[in-house]
Image (cartoon, rainbow, N blue to C red):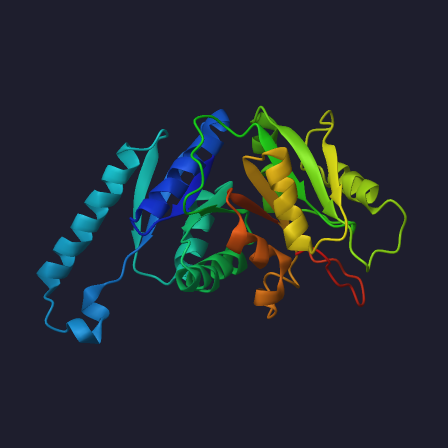
Length: 288
């Protein structure tokens, strides 16, 4: 079976842009898109009590037709999927059926909508599946071909990609890209040459092919999010890869996580790759 990418879409231009970007990323491995729309059934809405069953069926059919029309505009084969379940249940079900390489969704530039999408869709998706998640900001430049410059932002702490993140390694290897490991030194780091540690951790993670020789972009005297975004701009990256640690981005300190701060301000798509939770007493993440 060919690999697939599940795109959460609400039929907005931002969602179609995310689907188009995902299609281009998946081209080297001939990935098929699954366009998942979380359909709001009007019959279940107390404010729309006058809606008849026939009208609800017609509404669902029209939504499916629009979703299929979007799929025909994309540069990859696609399948339209409707679900009346919540985001958590719907994505969990689709991930179990199709075992996608990654999930994708668009992000609005409006602050309130951005927070709503992250809290009510992105975080439930990560919790439900623990799969890589591609987030495409509104206004991100569209790619005509797979990325050629990819920034991988990590701290100096070792990390182990979870099984779903490791499954993305062949896709990363298929892109004709150069890779730059981005490290922002912090006052908490005690070891010498933390950037070299970060570079070594990426090598040991197995995310990149053994023959890959990523460059190191290291900065100091900047807040982590500022340093990462500055590096992305300096190397002119088409895509930013972030490692998400379970105790940070998925935890209660959502607004304080570096990942969330980067997502709010990034002008390029961000691929979140989940890491395993290390069994270390008192372990605290620096980056995510």
